[in-house]
Length: 375
Image (cartoon, rainbow, N blue to C red; front, side):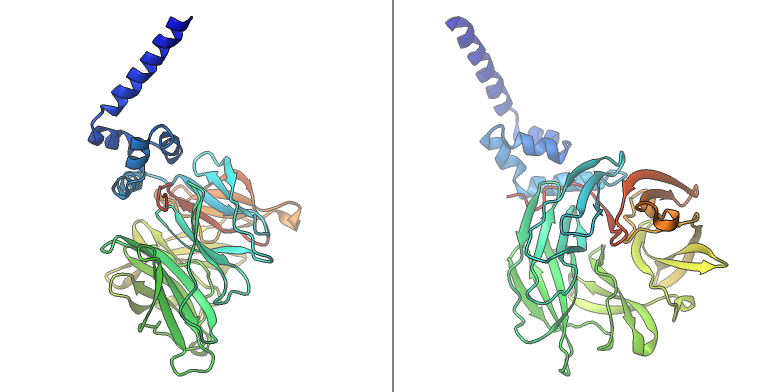
């Protein structure tokens, strides 16, 4: 009996020794092909594997391989009205993976203000102020990071947040825009660096009037820029404000002339690898969605989608890399909760996912899994 146990131990030790003898570059290549869930398990095998998987170079290589995939891994969906309302679903099978356990200050309901490389930037959804906590969250590895307090101490109104990746600096950044009620310089902007873990106030401000509103909490990050939809009531004008994370300069992008003064606010998105606008309109009791693309500073109508009856766009659309996006199917007379459906704009088809949404919040976004924020 003793010999049998001894032989088994020797075989296990020999197997571990053989694994440890693998060249690091081969392990690097093998691990970069694994899912985040498998990598988290591999970190527990031995110290050398943990060190390799936690290396920033490996995290970036794993992320780049994931970006090459033809679709996102997960959907993050607000399925309820309270703080525990965010859930993560498989983007292909539409099965629930888990509910997000968010930090729980009293009377705080959260909103997603930006997403990039599998990381979400979240803060309070209602009554937001400079004291409201801001978190970076990677749902795939269940890691939160609370951002430090801001440097602006004067009385100011919170306006909006943006979140993205600064490629040249290899750094994730959060941009916070606030408004002063009674000052000549009515906007102030701070930029948070994850690498430095600090806020820095910059001189650049959005090129909009002091009455401008940012009606949609979530901003878009695309090719090194942040984009927000802005509404200026005094000028009856809706436009896009962009922020270059490299030069830290704001610019104003005007919408197509045909959208000047429209009542419904369009949504800025990425469609067919281009900056785009989704504008919903109603004509003879039929709802349509016009998709506009910008090329060389010129807006071009890409296509118009006819909505089936009782359907509307799920904000902020959750567009996938295959250009399919998500709609909300409303049940007549509100007899049950709305249902999430997946729309194929080319085939003009919609697939019922079976996921129920809240009437109060219908946030749907798509993301790829990553190891960003893993210590």
